[in-house]
Image (cartoon, rainbow over all chains, first blue to last red; front, top):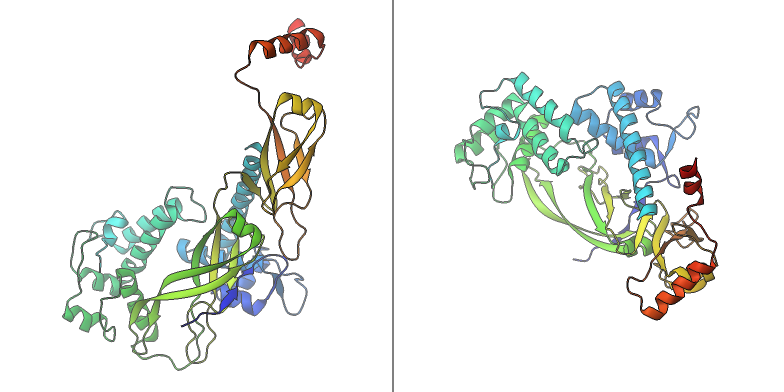
Length: 104
Length: 315
């Protein structure tokens, strides 16, 4: 049986995802994701727009939120706090990688 | 299937209370959760303890687990026919299952309240996998064959592990730690529901020459002292092929020579740069004639790289 080659898609600022896609990928109840948006843990392109769309990198954050929610048994506010720390860790790791690349 | 001691994984005795189980899991989750932990093998350990907790926190699943009996971790065992009849009706055989899949099947039956498949449309599960690629594959893009082992549900509610093969094209310019989505390559949807997606965690292996920072690449450029002083032209390797690099006279150690647009490039973004970092290397062996030349150079130059330190010492 032959398998078609499927393009993998980068989840970055160049790709847009809809609210429906975000909800489906996160696997969290819609009201909990809305709560995360209200804590600015997830940021729509235009929060005032009648229908939210997101840069695709928020899809990765939404899936992380879902994992943290389940694994630490936290409420959405607790999830939003942890997401802030996770983002900070990732930023610091990127800085370390950049310094190591420069220093050799 | 191989036995796993879920109590030992959580550091518990078999008579642990529900509160003991929750407290042990929470203590270990703080330490090993892969999103926050840098412990060695954190992800593997966390998966194991999450699997143990998922079963032991649920009274029905814990009773089913306890009734499997107790074996040495890693020992091959097979649930008794009575156990299968009581806890896993519709499961079929146990040959292509591991313990986590067995209890995942039990969860699914609990959720549905029986073995019958739901009539409503349900989206397929999303899968996750790690894909390790070389820097050259990340630079140029690559076609990858993935062979995953996933849980498949039978119409009567049983579960079994099956191979899941995916051919995918990784786009050029991906970076270490990046997440990609392969649409429709997760689990099959049910009753007309959409198929799930496959999420890939990209790991770019270290390269002997290049170091990566975002879209930029760094490479060490060793120069002899006279090349740094007089300037030179060198053939420098890049992932897209060798280029001639002009080193200007008076180049210092640690200086970064930028080759614009020679870094990682991805669709929709400007290409990164390649930086050649100058390292000045000195010969460890010199003959008498060369030593005489260096002495003559030392006598004739007024170059003093430590003038600022000498000023400080003199104060």
